[in-house]
Amino acid sequence: MIANIVVCLYVMAANAFLRQAGAARGFEPPSLEITVAFWVAGILAYLIAHEAGHRIAGAALGWRCVRFGFGPVEFFREGVSWRTQRVKTLWGAFVRQMPPSFAHYRQEKAVTILGGPMSSLVFGLVFAAIALTSANPVVFALFGKLGLCALVGVLELIPRKHGRIGSDGYRLRQVFRGGQVMDELLRDTVGEASNFTALRHRDWPHAPIVRLAAGDDPYNIYLAYLHTLDSGNLEAASEYMRRLIARLPEKPDSHFAIEAAYWLATYGGNTELARKWIERAGPDVERTMRLRAEAAVALADGQPDRAESLAKEALAQFRTPAACGSEEYDLDRLNYVLQGVAASGAAFADMATTRR
Image 1 (tube, one colour):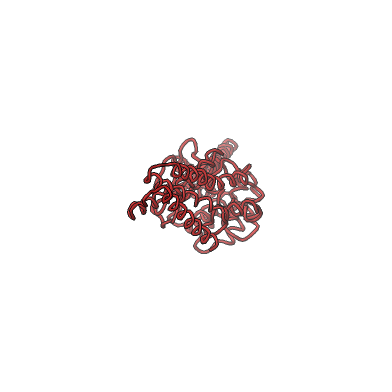
Image 2: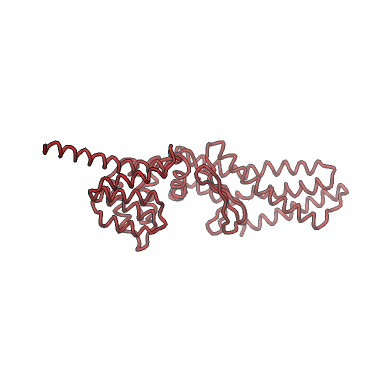
C-alpha cells in the first residue's frame, strides 16, 4: 500500500512539474489522443528499460536468459530455439535468467536485481534531459512522459509483495538477509539451471540442498536425491529416495514417480514395486525417463537384451553432445544401465566358458 501511494504521488508531482515547465516555455499541451499515446509509449519505455537492465547485468555476468514475457505472451527456450505461448496476463514484464555457476550466486543475484532500477534511472534521466533541453513542444511532451515513466522503475527498490510477485527491493532484501530465504531462492533456481545450462545436479550448492531436504517437502527431498546421486553418494541418495517414496501421495508428480521406479529397479531390488511406480507416473512423463526406468526394470529382471534395446532407444532421443546438465545426468543413468547389460553379458560368457 505504501509503495503504491509513493508511486502515485511521484507520478502526480512529476506530471505537474512537466505541465509547469511546458507552460513556462509557452508550449501548448497536446491533445487528449496524443497525450494517451505518449503515456502508452512511456509505460512501454519503462518496462523495456527496466527489464533490459536486468538482462544487461545478467549478460555481463554470463547468466543465460531462459524466459521473458510481457502481458499475455511469454517467450521461452526449448532446446536451441525460442518459442512463445499465451499465459495468464501479467501486468508488467519479466526476465528469467540462470547463472553459469553457483560460486558467487548471492552477490551476482544482487547485481542482476539492481540492474533493473539502475537502468531505469539512467534511461529516465536521459529522457528527462532531452525533454528539458528541447525547443520542440512535441519532443518535450513525448520525452517528458518517457522520462517520467522510466523513473518509476527506480521505485521498484521499495520492498513490497503482491501474491507471489515481489518488487526488486523485496527480492534484494531476501538476498541480503540470506539464511532460509536465500535457500528458497536457490530452490527455485537449481532445477531450471540444470535444464538450461551446463550445470549438473552435482554442481548445486551442497549445504543449502541438505538444509532444504531436512524438512518434509517432497520436491526438496527430490532435489537432494538428484544432487547426491549425481555426486556419487549412493548411500545418501538412497536414503533421500526412501524418504521421498514414503511421502508421495496416491497421484504423485510424474518425475518423482518415474525416478522412484528407476531407483527401485537399479538399487532397491524391487522390480515389482518399480513397475507399479511406472504406472503411477502416468502417460505425461517424458519418454526418455520412462524408457530409462523400463530399461532398469528389464535389466533387474534378467532381460539384458530388452534392457539394451530400451536404453538405446532412449539414447537416440538425445542430442550429442548433451544440451544441458540435466540431459548429461540422464545420459549417465542410461549408460549405467548399458554397463549393467555389458556386465551381465560378460558374466554369462564366463559361465559358458567354465562349463566347457
